[in-house]
Length: 262
Image 1 (cartoon, rainbow, N blue to C red):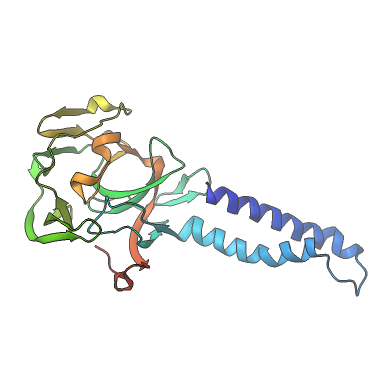
Image 2: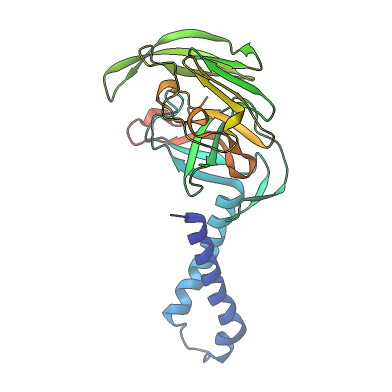
């Protein structure tokens, strides 16, 4: 469901009714006559829809985390806010950038339109920028030939399946964040797709190495062995970017997660 398109359609409809009433219907209505419901309701909703549309399209948009690919940073059920203008102002619906403000940085948690189905929004962490060489070999991350620093943390307990994963604090760019590694999972990348520019990647039994093309980004989930990401379905083009996730504002299952984010 394209909520932005639905909201835009409602905005056009209610705005058109309000305009027609101001220009023509209102002038032909008797002075003491009450507005018909089909005029009153759209006129009442128009300013509300306009405010929501502007906020959601250009400033902040709420998302709900549907999967565990970003555990432990984000867990299933987290409601997050996404900054829509961090990387530039884009026209709603068509998602075309009209004002360039900044570019994604390594370590950013980014929401983007899934390359294989742009109607779906995904969230992962930016690991590789255009021109970078990214290698994920034997479960270690290398950026331009340099291994990303990491240090062990206490094992992470998965409440939903009562099991543990190895937890590390990794530094991606200037950002330090937690990642999970399942030692019994293979280093190979399973179910690799035939994605655009796949020739930029080399797969083997130890993992994958990719040269990030211009205008594209390489993203990975923090739950490294339980994330289908750029290792599987390829690069994220610039035009697919939605915004940078920055704040957890609610989780029905754990109220203490409010505001927590890395």
